[in-house]
Length: 210
Image 1 (tube, rainbow, N blue to C red):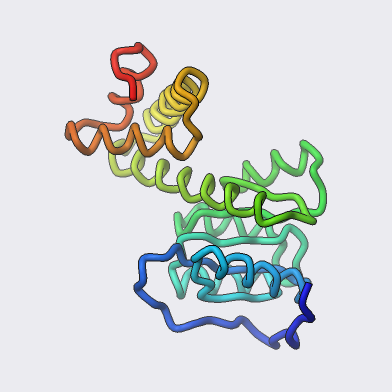
Image 2 (cartoon, one colour):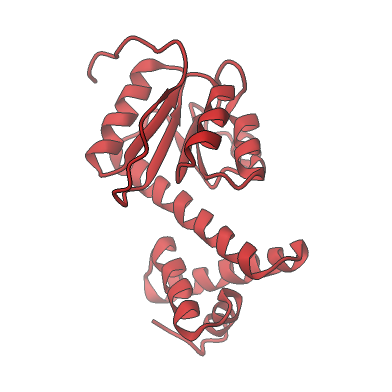
C-alpha cells in the first residue's frame, strides 16, 4: 500500500466530468484505505468525484454531486455508514456499497435493510471490489426501472420478486451473471416496449431464453 496523503479537514470533491465512467463518492475514516480505494477505482475506469472521512459529509457530497455509487464504511464519525446509507437510499440518490470489517449475518442484514445493495468485507482485493460495485449499480438500475413502471409499493415489491426469480432462472439455467441477467431482462423490455416484470415472467415461464 502506498503512504496516505494527509487526511482532509472536510469533504473533498472533484469537478464533475461527463466521460461516461461511473461516478463514485468514497466515505471511509481510515485515510490509507480511502487512498487505496481511490487508486483501485481509478485504475479500473471509475471516476472518484468526492471523498470524506465522515458519514454526515458523505450524505452531503452525494446530494451535491449526484454520483452513481456511494461507498460507505460502517463505522465513521458524524454519522455511521448504516444511517448514511439509509438517507442515501431513501432519497434514491445513488447505489450504496457498504464496507465493513465484520461479516456477521446480523450486520449484513442491517446493511441490506438500510438500503445497501452490496457489501464488502475488509480487507478486500480488487477482484472483490469491482464485482461488488457492478452488482450494486445493476441493482440500483433495476430498482429505478421498477419505480418508473410501478407506482404502488406493494406492486413494486411483487415485481422485484418476479425479476429476482427470473434472474435466478437465467443464472442457473444459462450460466449468466446477475448483471448479465438483469441487462437481458432490461434490454428485452426496452426492445419490446413492455414492462421488465412482463419479461421476467416470460423468463420464469420458459417462454423467453437468451
